[in-house]
Image 1 (cartoon, rainbow, N blue to C red):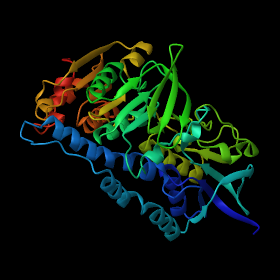
Image 2 (image 1 turned 60 degrees about the vertical axis):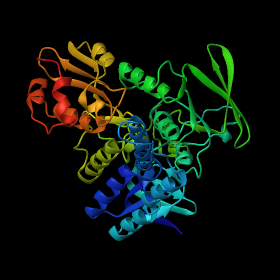
Image 3 (image 1 turned 180 degrees about the vertical axis):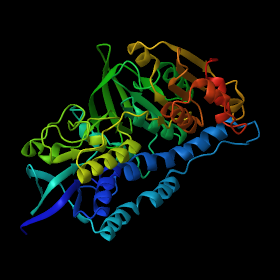
Image 4 (image 1 turned 60 degrees about the horizontal axis):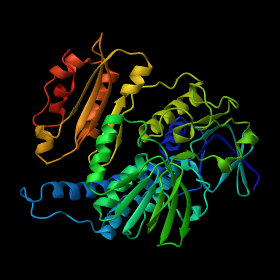
Length: 452
């Protein structure tokens, strides 16, 4: 078929890759976009979006359980099959819709595994493409565990497509995915265990609020095993034995399903980046402040595959817009470390922005810390929510907010107000003096800030 030449080749069709491709095309560049998976990326099809649909159902179960006998006669129950069908109404149309959108914009689409054959050439099967600029936006994939019986695991994609929910589930890992899936499965009636090799789960979040969240999970029967390493899986599809070691002792747990939620790595194994002279570090492709490969200036990386920032969808879009601008106008826009709010959609939700208390101490900042359980506050009592709390960090000298951590329903929205304040330097006193609609989670905000 010979060599096809473009101004720009983009590998990956999630929010990072799509942003670059569409921006460059709008500017009149010839663009090719490639994906080995269905077009549209992880978040919308196999990640945050479908997950939150399942969380929505689990929240109704939790809320109705909390209010049973307080005006609600019986807890809601989940019909797993019907919930999955509802989820598919969101995810199924995405690949075709994404492809049509690219085609309508004049972006040429290629389905298949891309690999570099040289510094500026990509091969997909028998086809070769070349461009002065190539953008890698392939995201992440589950990290191999390298244990016997690994093929018996399912990953997050598999969990979000389960035709039926088994009675017993083990989650391997102690991050977002394990915690969120545990809540969904437990509220849908499964008995859930989490096995995590770290000393504490959700390591990036505030330790005190995580400890309270763990209490909330224990209260609904989720069993969390810490400082434990899964060593092997045995059995067949439905009857599995998980072997793990903890404090030099060997243990086993029997289950029907084991979900891999133990971290993700940059999805670069098939790209043959060595042929393009691209350096890959521990977290992903090594880039400079312009998100350009440090070892091959014709290649940029953005989204989860790049070593910068957290693997979050809003950051992927943001990074995509930086890369597009730098390719179109020459490097003129740098990656900025703005505060990025993040939420773990457990029930209750845990949300966070800015520094944790440990990080503030490590930086040598003098901060006023306000930390309190809030299950006796109106917002919690109104829905009979037992495990809620917050912690705020305010710089002692200036009254600047440097971190906020909230556990409880509504915290995923409340954290956006804290982010706005941090980003635009609204100090604690001014934020606390604002009038918010009442009674709302926003109206609790002034009580979460130290008197300054």
